[in-house]
Image (tube, rainbow, N blue to C red; front, top):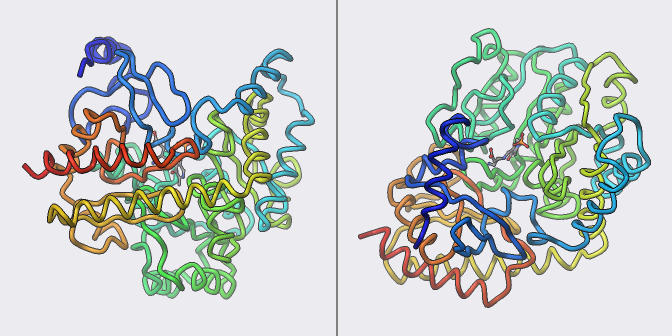
Length: 430
Ligand code: KE4
């Protein structure tokens, strides 16, 4: 497989960009080797700078749920860009987007657009602190909420991959107010509430985790968190940057029937362009400037191009609900095949899946939290990853990430992925 152009680009990139990438997980540090530089993508496929084609199983880490170069999204952006890319003034598209989000996510009565998932979660925590007058918040080990200082404690995704779940540069002062509990452990939450009865502003979590690999909530977990937050005046925040509009039009909160006080969104909401958002109960959101005292701002928030792309994608998802059935059926068939082939070969794996997100863990343990996710054989995952790449399939370049199915993945492409998996497993265990 010729990767010469990617190699020379990576050499040059490292002269000008830290680690040669603009987001750490892209550097292949967790799996070794040279990152593949992508030139274009269409439908289910990525095309690299050397002309190699891959079935895309990350889909930009979630946003490309309809497949790459979706015509409706593309045309919406082309139309918008002809009217100039940005005004820094209020626009009709932002009103339409806000109304559409509120119609799709019932717990959201008001919503503020930002430019990334990180901005959304940072703002949501600040808002919860401003609304309650309390300082501390609880996050779960292995959950990733972006790179805001207060979240880089026991964080997931790249922070976990690189063993820097507690990043340098985050001060002890910041860390004091971040309480960390194991995912799926309601007793640990009770213990924190007993210890800090009046000083916990919020509990934030991924309602279905993607960032330690895919880990679903225990059946009662979300409901128990809702009850505890109601009892103790704590703001419950669902970080649905990954699960929003993916697991259902109304996200994980629709799937599990538990409504948070605030929701953070990203990825799919921008149709591939940089968009984040946070929203929830009007009585809380009205604390956000200029309606209220909690300051938050952004030059390109609600940007016309990003709104055009996001509106096109969300409207499609809202009016073509059958796409979720297709996504979930495709994922179920793939996941069943992954498990069956591993079993045939006697390779211990755990495959966790919810809707159209999943992770193949190289462990024989049930993966229900960070401790069990960490029993995975990451070296074996690295060998598997490169073997899949050679077979023309692009999985997540880290054991501790979720993978995402797009609507462009057909049954024939699932067959290709499973054939690649059959070969890659043999190489991974050799
Ligand atoms: P961004 O700031 O990267 O737009 O969003 C941060 C974020 C917040 N919350 C959740 C649940 C997320 O999954 C993310 C970002 N996800 C990672 C994928 N594990 C982004 C990939 C990357 O860091 O390059």
